[in-house]
Image (tube, rainbow, N blue to C red; front, side):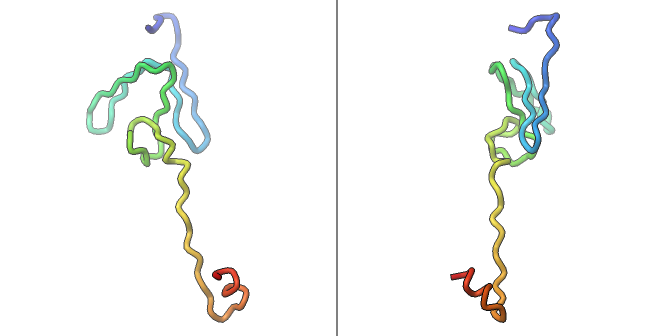
Length: 81
């Protein structure tokens, strides 16, 4: 239950979700209203979440970079084995 004299706290995290003290109602870009009764809600800011607008930690997934093999470089060939 919210208290009228309490100011909601929003915490911005570096590279992660925005943490909002709940309960909270969020309006998505398409106008849908979603509600969470949790005491702290992690709101997705990267748009990778399968549970958008809520964070599912998808921001932690890093895209694996493919190594480029250089056939003229023996050291490159050793690294690829």
